[in-house]
Amino acid sequence: MKIRRVIVGLDPVQQSRALLEAAVDLAGQMQAELLGLFVENQDLLHFAGLPFAREVGFESATRRSLDVESMERTLRTLAREAREVLESIAGGTQVQWSFRVVRGALAAELLAAAEESDLVIAHLETPPPSGSSVRVVHAGDVEALRAALEEEGGACILLLAGADARLVGETLRQAGEPERPPQRSSRRS
Image (cartoon, rainbow, N blue to C red; front, side, top):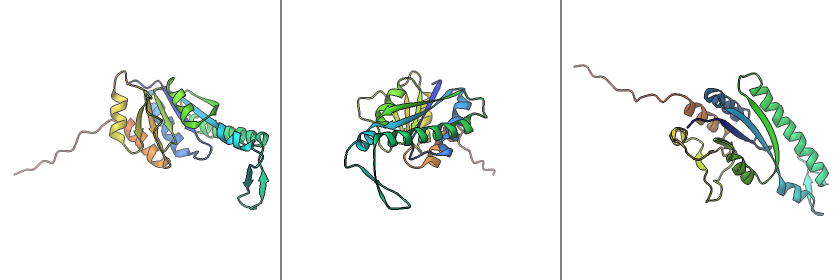
């Protein structure tokens, strides 16, 4: 399968430089476009609009009211930071890259993005609901990712990153490397 576009789901909680570096490396090897997709969590915004919604400051342990405007400002700040990290990594390479912000549920937005992509890399622990034409590969399963990449006319691949961005990076690096034939031991008599 010729990878033309790689999408990386940029989660504000799980931003990982190692994951982005590996995605940029893979896009470069495959001569593919890279899209950083930041999803503003619609449920979080709905929650912020509820009259009883509160947050507790990490350092101060003080309770503060939440409101939609301040939550939107926070999400815009997080999106800007994600774009800056992506730019700092991909900007110095030959990889053509872009950045987009959407609002919705993370899994649903990633599935929607998958329809315009060949490979989506996302911080999801569980696969999307069944009925999707997306082929799911878990981080760490290099052989499954290689098989999916080699499949002709196959569905989009969704690589589930889980919480271990280092493992995802290693999976992407290994999948992008040429497969080595098994070593034969030679015995001389």
